[in-house]
Image 1 (cartoon, rainbow, N blue to C red):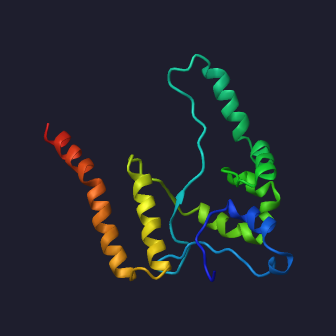
Image 2: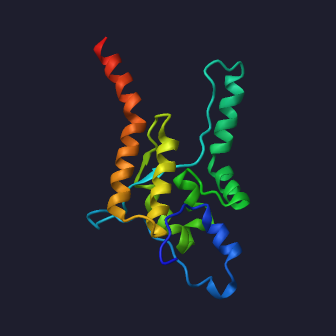
Length: 170
């Protein structure tokens, strides 16, 4: 591959799976921006720690969230799993601060937006991946794939728009 858009979870995989003679032949970069002045926008991924509103153990749950979110535990979790810390101070407190391949993800971390909060987001993401694969494998020209993707996403969101319009009319 000349280029591959992936996430930070693959840092450890590349280090583990690539042969020794290829370890110095790969690098990371932030997503490009239209203007070229800074990193492009990515989505904020990962997992969340949450406490249910109806929990009978809110104080204990909150202490657990605080513990798992601490700089020390975020660094420890990174060293155990390779998952990047959510806290920027944990990046500075670990070897990530000196890791050239992690630098792109550090820059990208400052240019993220949340995943849209609609139930259809996974289906839309699947359609994006399928369309990209068709283009990559030569099965469809990029323009045609984008036009079809636009129609597919429009169809997927049609019911949501209908529901929102109906709610607004009340």
